[in-house]
Image (cartoon, rainbow, N blue to C red; front, side, top):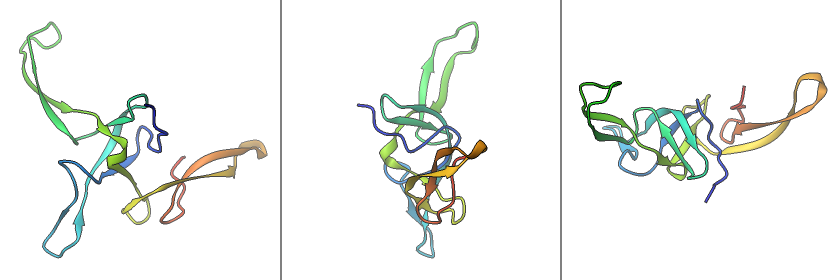
Length: 122
């Protein structure tokens, strides 16, 4: 089940669902858990986000980790639970695709934020 990935490595994403879902502060504004995408697992339709969905793993001593013990690391989260952060408004936004003029006059496909129209790809 390989979903069409609208998220790429290095994107800043906001968690919309799950144990890190948005909460409300004292003023009634939504507070999102935010993180940078470290790894994309396209075949599973999941991504690993920095500081999100932390799990504890028990590891035995090895040469690389002679101490062993309990290690806390990020687990993959399903792509449907995430939204890209709009670079202009810092709010969650959907992703659209359009063609823009690139180098040498050729067209290139880029992602853009639906809320502000800002281009996400460099």
